[in-house]
Image 1 (cartoon, rainbow, N blue to C red):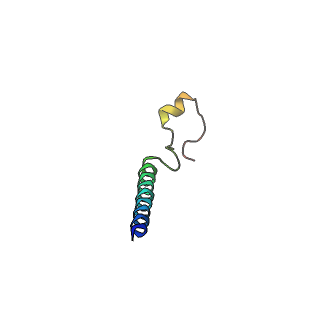
Image 2: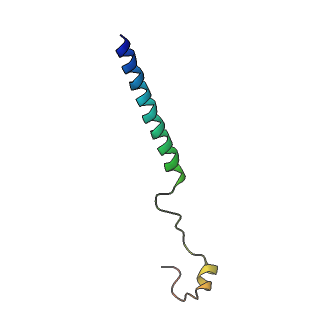
Image 3: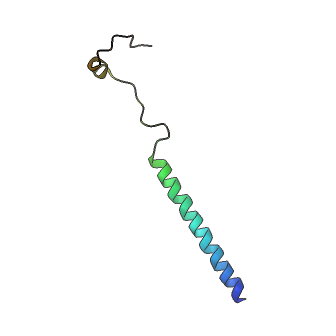
Length: 57
């Protein structure tokens, strides 16, 4: 009986650690962007580089 309780305690501690790691990884995954913060340049930024190409393509 003693070993059964010890085994159950170890198993529950293992489950809590795995749950904590999953929760921590989900929290960090929501904070970072998968593809970065890409955006299109506006007219002021294009003028700074003296871009003369078509803006609409």
